[in-house]
Image (cartoon, rainbow, N blue to C red; front, side, top):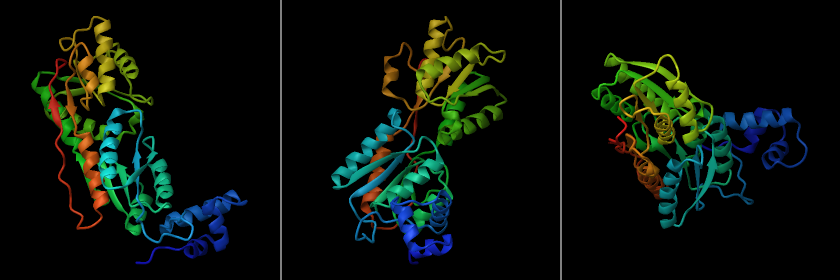
Length: 329
């Protein structure tokens, strides 16, 4: 199937090819209405502008596009380290974009990266816009998705089942005798992998006859400070839980420090659990119960898949998270 051309975009948008070219190159004056029509037409048919003068017809240069939600969280820097190390061994170079957990922003970055005709793309998670899925399939660019296996990948994914991780933590806390649970998270619920963990956690809790008595999801980015704030709010409320599950270790650590400063015994008065098993947890007064994930290995596997280019696309088996029992449950 031939790739869409600039002529196809012009026909659909009702403008000249020269106008389409000017919109794609960002040169000359173009009204906002025309610019919008051209971009919508390009998205609709899956056209991607080629930024290389003279035109490299294929997706074969040494660049690999990589998009992550943010660069502040060490979770993603570990994945990037694996990607960078393996691509370096192959003589390839990653080009990074940050989506800030936005599907729309990811779409814009994908189109921009594909205009440079990269060898492949590495995306975070499995939830993307239909436009991203369409253009990835239509261009034939090799795509690897990291961090998650709960869903339908574009081609191949390298990560863990977050639903399985959430369910495992719930079973552990139920076995310890906890029945009234709270949940704390940041990013306004935009971290879809954290949402999957909590959904599975909640299902196990309900099936055991226990209950989620409070849930607080802040629009702020995850941090220890946010964990302190949310834990204070939750433990000061009328529906005080006897155990708190958090979206990640930063929030769990903040919750732990709040409890210790205010004479709240952990886990006797309230239990705490996180996710990621970040190294800084070892510096805390109590080791937090958490889930360890093979983040560096995810990066290595995704980069290997993109760099190989040849061979049948096979479904990669989920990598295994590991429950780390600490002193907080």
